[in-house]
Length: 396
Image: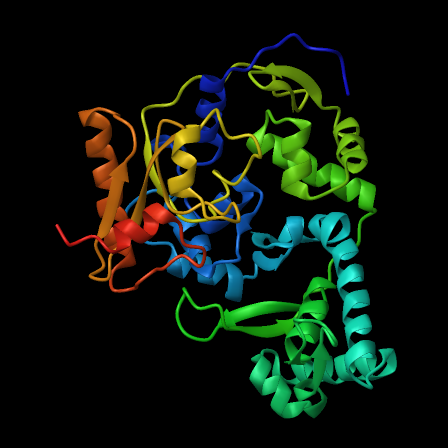
């Protein structure tokens, strides 16, 4: 992994790197959705609104990100929504999709197809031949339509409306439709992609479209590409951080670190890694504030979070499954949380004293967010204690 380095990177420098590389400091903000996605490697897409809110927090100017993100996703297709790390849906640069597919999604797709066939065999008369024919018909229909909802595909392909008994003989036994499982497998295999949703930008009811063909890199080369991009955006990081973020086996993480020539450095929590050309000190940027959405890639970027999050604040900001809610940041630290009230106002609460100048900067970011969100109401899919409390607070 390169020559041993005695370089120490403390928490303050790591926070400075966040401000610059995650496009959060004022002078580091981006001019397009593609620039944001490229800088962050991937945006969490489980909650569709989080993608737009994450981009909006990092764009220069007061204009909202909706038109820009929709252009990138549905017109230029320079960004793509797909299953990726930790079996989670992400939005990422289209150019990175082959590496994510080969390193991460393809092995998960194999497991997903195997599980579907097992469930069909246990709860129906459908077999692999039936599944292959159903998929062929779905792909043929999409080739004609270019884009369709699951319901439209079910109307054109009756087999897609079939049901099976899930969990037969167990407490979870119940009748389920095959449609969502079939479309999920095709999506994970990279044969179809999620297109424009029904409704507005907060909707999770997506249409499906044929996937653009792309190269299929060697899995080891793909893992090295992904780790290299991630270290450029988020390094330094520990081996545990990398294993958690990718969802890979530790041997795959170590192989990828070796392939990119990662250099060990000393962090407060132990040994971390950076790229070999990333050892120079990073100066602290100008003071900055940000309101980041639930599941934002910055707070969700590392498993070890003590260098940007006080432990006593975790219960208010995370749900029981470990999903982070909307957060308020000041100079690379999480200092509070925020929520949108039913009247559209943005309510926030600071969990630590940051001073008057910081409070003014945070208030300005809240006003900027409220301005571009406008009449749209955003409720996180995974709600946290502080977000629920703030959302129910009276208007000021």
